[in-house]
Image 1 (cartoon, rainbow, N blue to C red):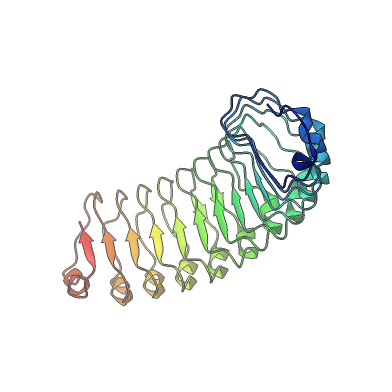
Image 2 (cartoon, rainbow, N blue to C red):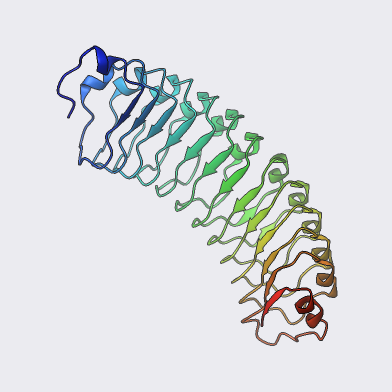
Length: 294
């Protein structure tokens, strides 16, 4: 506990209360009006006091790994907030007012009980990183459409069924981590993501890929293991930056010869495709230095 407030503590810019078995925050914090960084990671907090949201100079908050089930609407007053980490709590919803945090750049919501995000979060135009992994989403939240500066999107370990057409609005995206969902379809509009470098789709229900995937000219990592792919589009050979291609544990019977065009390919994994006919030309990839598993 904070036992005494003096002039020095009033001027604090950072306060770290991590791993202290706190069940509530000390009220003395309310006087620390200059706080910029606050962390109460890994405690026993079940709720957050209103006074925390009067500290309008806060830029970073980490309250992850607690048992918080409710975030007050007053969090929307923290207009300077850039990082908000509420991973691994017990949230079934988050307040719409988070959409007022227009300077927010990093939003961590993993490990909660979320099914939806408020549409007002589309106003988070400066967000570069969104993590909603290990929740209960069945669809990619529509509000993501407005987060046009996103660089990294982490949505794995949900029940998301598709990557929808509005993904094309996220033209700055460099990484999509969407493994361990129930994705059956990917909209052709994904081909607009010309800056995408990593597309991680393992452990889904994909049977086919959109032909537009060949437009992802900066893609370096494509992980498709443990899906239900029965074929690959010839356009996959257009991914000239591709270094790692994982096709393990699918239903492929053949692979397109256009894969020979992948001059930068360092690793190709074809294992656990029952009935796959291994083409003779694979040795050309090996001669280039590509590691093959089949």
